[in-house]
Image (cartoon, rainbow, N blue to C red; front, side):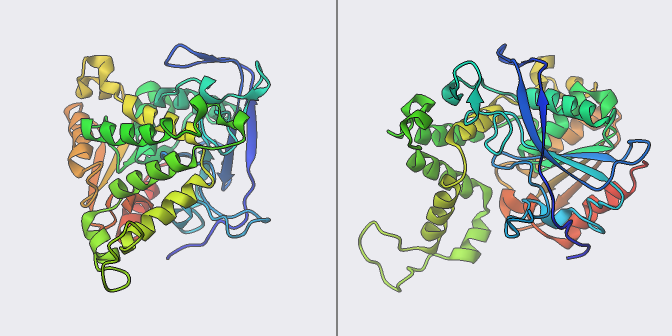
Length: 374
């Protein structure tokens, strides 16, 4: 892997007293955003890049904590000196979105009105709400215009939303493994995942914190389902196969195949640190995302508002957000005479490809970023 790790990093917190009116009509009277930065903001404040996280992501994008050297950022392989997100050139900002469970105001934080965790009382949030909150953080950091906003999956949707809502505040958008809206099939996957949580006896209507319990079984099942959709069929076949672990069938309901063992491990791991209410909110934000609704379903008319240059990246084996979905965005931009580059990368990791370390993929990102004038 080229370049270097960013090394030890620190988390920062910004408190906002200005109320935030959400798309739902609910109002957050005040809130905190937890974030990290890497690199140095230049004198012109023209080299800032916002990286938006996906469903289960957070602000810890790269590097490690001095007191927890094994806690490596979720996209560490792309951030650092000499890497595509070159911290010798760019000032990188990564935020834990509202509704998250890693420090920003969300269901597991204290509701000042009650003195208890928000739980199910935390309002539904939409992608546009995150973008408005991120814009306020940019104001706090003195950044009038991002050199780029980028992300994969739900993070890519935020980058797309930035170009529509704040066209004067973003020069480039890098939209990776995303879509202009979810298909009915994707909404169906999300609903099944939510039902696993909502029907867990330990859910308690979302107020499980007060019962000193967590809907671990439901969250575990939700993550297992999600992982199936993030991987490609070929990858699962190559990595796990279908031979019984012990060479013969046991004729019971225990773990007999490697894929079963993998999914249960991932489910248990995720349920050990993620918040179920946050999972519900994030999947609902995915379901609601459809900026074309603002123009009666016309994506081309919606994207006419954008002034940014675009890099759209998709992956051949991503069946959850297939290349065809990325091409819908490309077509809408081209119809408006937009500045857009498109890359379809042949990687075998399914939807998770956007997180992987791959020389060709990273070179595409790096080449585009190096051409941005600061």
